[in-house]
Image (tube, rainbow, N blue to C red; front, side, top):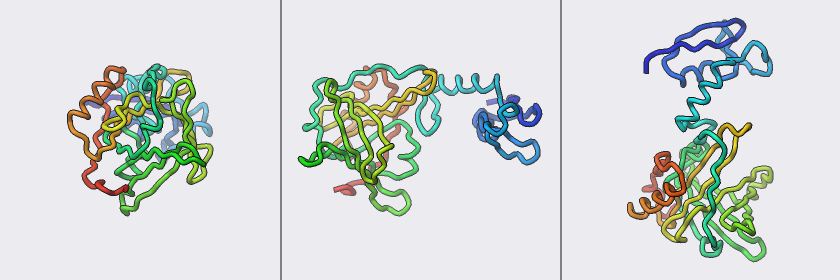
Length: 249
């Protein structure tokens, strides 16, 4: 890409040539403020009138959104979340077991935390349904876990709500959907959140399997289902599970 000029304001209007939008974001902070003397970023709250790339910011954000770029550690797409139904007549009991993460959209916290992600769907009479999310620390090789309490929507059982229980962090909660599954070979889990003003939304799609390394036919079948639901399978990233065999028994 050829170099281009971005104008932004700090203490006074300055002009600088950048080789890419990413370099501009890294230097300017997209709404933060660069001191012309030290090149240090300052909070937009501290300098509300001096640090506003008023015309550039909307255009750059729109460009990133339309291209499906990753922002805030997730895939960001334009508009509000699409309305996609969960799997019809979803059966929580048949879904119990260990589901391995085979492919997924980019998620920064998963990438940084570790590898070999496994979502264990469990049930205990005195506790109800819950999940234990296991992963292997990327540096030390230790297996870590988080447990989430689950609640299934009465009218749409494939729509799940979760609350982090262990460690006890009740304000960490959310929802996601099981869009489709054959209960053994594959499952499509999907989470979508609208951003403020409804101009964009974040999406995460997980392709899961009870097999450590499912066949190419299984993966293709799952992707065809995802495509039929209007989801972009080109954003899926294959996870290396060759080192995960028997790690989470």
